[in-house]
Length: 148
Image (cartoon, rainbow, N blue to C red; front, side, top):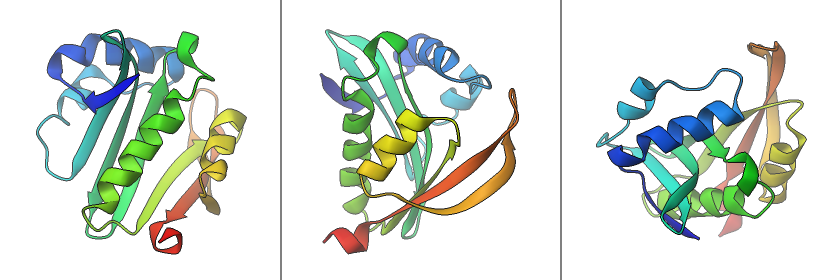
């Protein structure tokens, strides 16, 4: 598996993976707007030149938000999401980020286990954050200062 920066030509596959992963997926225009923006990390995981997952993180000063992470259904449970998260943590640590936040559906047990296993801890709940179906979000935080 290779992890690299997302490219415009990856967009159709990224959108396909996104739609297979979420009931309210990001639009192609939302992804397109991320290319070449400062303080945004937009990466993909690929095997044999086929994109199988992607992640988006943005940051300002010493805080970041893991805004989107998706893996194709056939590639789930194989460490792809963990590899994407690890790469993003490594990259933002190098630019001075000290805390990473994210929201995850309460019912998304595999994601919660992944993030908690990586050291993220719950710091809040956003009531009715998600639509289709309506659901609360768990707000998680990773304190990178605690890891050094």
